[in-house]
Image (cartoon, rainbow, N blue to C red):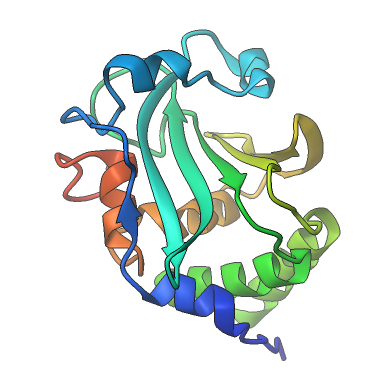
Length: 200
């Protein structure tokens, strides 16, 4: 039986309202003006297609302290967000977090949003425990969703691991992007005001 450990600081971060990104946003959620000029897609995405564009950005805070900046990148192909197109969630940490905390908080949230049999949760837990390591302020974690191919994770440009399990990939990113997320303001900042529901 899978046992989930609750880590108070991270759960408080998930449970309290998110602070939107400081940059101004268009209807698509992407920063405008000078903010957009300094935002560059992670280099590791270039191998998966040209033209990666920033859809939106947000900040996760708890107790007034910034935990990380989050950026959502996608390839051209339409205004609507869709799991049928490649996208990447780019997280730049402003604090240190243990890999075990990332895993357990992820399991709690993805299983809340996407009810999943225990056997599959155990497999997802084993995968995440193999790849997620402790992070510190300044580290950049990128999760890349590839339709038909699954997911890849990079830390500071280095491949941490990959999985061909598309169900896991969608369940993982729904932590931030699903209407049931505990961080609706962050979701809005990432997807934009027109994203009333995640397109499939």
